[in-house]
Amino acid sequence: MLQVFSNLFEELEAEDIIFCNWKSHHSAESHLDGYGDLDLYIPIRFKQKFEAISKANGFRRVASYQSHHNYLEHYFGLDEVTKRFAHIHLYYKIITGEHASKNYNLPLENFIIKNLDRSHLLPKLNISSRRAIFLIRYFIKIGSIYGLLQYWRELKKYKNEWNAYDVSQNFNYEDILEIGISRKELIEIDNIYQGSNFFKQLLSSIKLKKKFKAFRRRNFLKHQLFVIHNLIIRLINRLILKKQKILIPGIVVSICGLDGSGKSSIASSLEENLSKHFCTKLIHLGRPPSTKLTFFFNCFIGIYSFLKKVRGANNKNYSDISKKNVSLIYAIRSVLLAYDRKVQSNNAHKLSANGYIVICDRYPGLEIGKMDSPRIPADNSKGMLYQFCYMQEQKLYQSIKKAHIIFHLFVPLEVAIDRNNKRNKFGKETIEELKERFLVNAEARFLGKSYHIIDSSVAFESVLTQVIHKIWHSKAWK
Image (cartoon, rainbow, N blue to C red; front, side, top):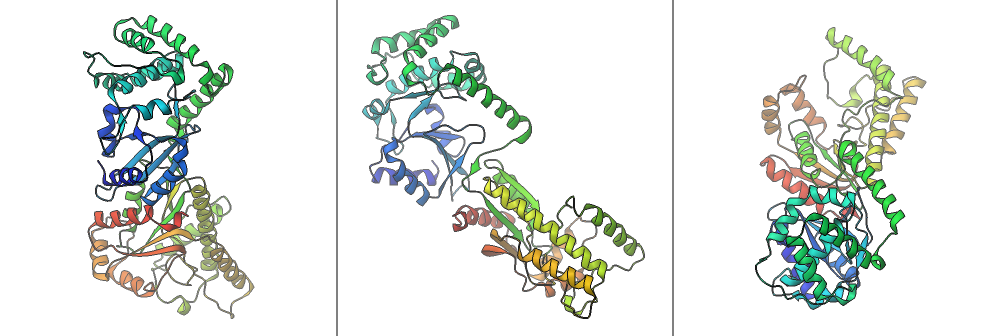
């Protein structure tokens, strides 16, 4: 069991909160180790307490893009020992039925509490009650075409859950008065599940769903419309969008630093790790893509810069910007770059408002001449067009929203030089250029609400672990 789970369960127990694993018991051990989602039931009256305790233990609530149901929530927590994410699929009421629609709200709280085995850190139902709930869930799932398709898709899971019970023993079923099921009816559907043909199982499903009509969340027509709508969403998501869980709220994280600090590698690895669970987007703000407004001008200036390179007249120069004689073309290009960065940063914050973890490779600053910052120095001797460019660039950078978290990676110059020499990158800086860039950007700072300077000269995995930990526990989420 992950430590983050045991910490949560111990505190829930200490606060006398009723909770248990109410289904998928055969996979519970795997789920507790961080593989899959743990199905947890907590009566609705404990909702406020659970939210406070889970938050204090590092869990965050997330939403599913594909489906949302009242009284069902998802929580993720980061385990500090294994660095795996713990996933709780939380039920405040027993909402069940077909996998997608979950069209039944069964009042089983008293039944669950009465048959609860609290001898383990994670309480669970006694074996007869587990089997009874399995049978009820099974027979209300298979009574429709869509339900059957979903059942056959997950047939192995159902078989594994059933095989976890010792079917050779007689089960001490009891009446479930809350939903009108008698012990005799439970024994009957048990026998039908084990020995009857599938046609008889379908008839039993229809009979049981008729009995549960009062517990439906939607009538027949609304249910069919919901199923069609949800099926379309799932197909679009599977084939096109491929969205994972949505965080509430999202966050903009930026990885900054000079060449050789490992910022691009950390940004890519963050995206790879977090996108397994959450909606994640990697955005480049050092050299952002052109917008519709800047595309033509950027192409023209790109050709102009290329021709200068061919003539050998465009060597990189990272010296103090105030000492440069900045050309008008350079000033125009700087304004276009500032505009593109502004647009990309806006996109990052829009995505985070929609629940994304947005990872920015680099982020703007405000100090003229520093890395990813304004590039046009104040010069009153220049003409009106130059002054206009200067003012526009300043306005654009000052209007850029701060990232929620900045991770400023730092390495000593000798480490950066060594790493840069090993990089397989076209047009990378020479040793002299790197030295000059280090000198100019020694005091560079970037736009962030929460700022962390990270020593990235240590092992890569150690840096990545630090960054993930600080993201998950950051107060910037608030």
